[in-house]
Image (cartoon, rainbow, N blue to C red; front, side, top):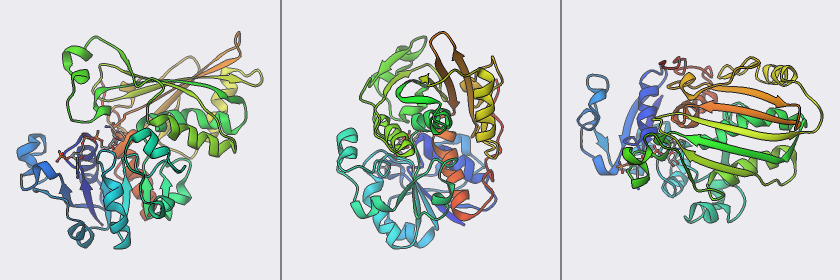
Length: 345
Ligand SMILES: NC(=O)c1ccc[n+]([C@@H]2O[C@H](COP(=O)([O-])OP(=O)(O)OC[C@H]3O[C@@H](n4cnc5c(N)ncnc54)[C@H](OP(=O)(O)O)[C@@H]3O)[C@@H](O)[C@H]2O)c1
């Protein structure tokens, strides 16, 4: 199968290159980066010397459609919604890592992303690509809206206990922490080494664009609109993210009962690993891999459950899940090309 990557010079695009190079069923046919068009991949990214020998292309939709079966968009908000409608018409399957096709409610995308809404007809075709929850829908989708990194970590961590109605969803508080690659390759003062190193900073409190995405999925799962508190922090890691979630239990539960629920819920989902009692996951434990590790603590004094969920933002939070979705869509084994173990230490 022939794949194109638009946004191949960004962090998620580079991670797609790394994964697809190891995928036995896929050939990288074209890599698109407007600012690097005509340059050799290994001139710009010497770590790929002798590994992949090709040039960056400019964005040409006819060329993409002629040469590829699947196109990944690893571009900033507002880009893919202009290109995907025409690619779909030409029969190309699209997997969008940006937020352009995730929010279904009218006006919500414009409100949170400050870009024009995507075309309504195309938005209707988009399937939310949370692989473990929507595999059948993904398998027949021509447009997959790959989830955001924070929503992936949060939803995988909290949905089982919400689906079982063990908790009050309206009481959910999510405390998210992300490494710097979550903000992409472009630089800013806030991402300056001197500002980030040995520091932690809160950002976009109550304004993060992943808030409506998480609310949308939880609301659709329980059939009722909910709102939640979600705080985001920047931490001095290159890759990795942790979501610590706090939620009120409806009835008394023990750590063991919660762990058993999750073990059985994710029994057939190899990328989800449930931590044993008294152990909690770390971003380093999943770095470079497509795993999501989840740990728990029941506070019997407050009758509150804490769920800790970690992923590598560029893997399960972006490129890894995108390849997992491609596997589901094209009928390959879910783990194909994704069996990399975490890099440790
Ligand atoms: N980073 C993460 O952890 C993460 C996780 C989940 C989802 N995402 C989402 O994935 C997308 C990419 O994120 P990233 O962090 O990889 O970004 P990034 O490092 O900033 O890279 C952005 C890429 O998009 C390309 N691009 C920019 N404007 C373009 C245009 N008009 N047409 C075509 N290509 C264009 C850039 O190419 P040039 O170099 O030529 O400008 C670059 O290759 C974003 O929507 C982000 O929200 C990121």
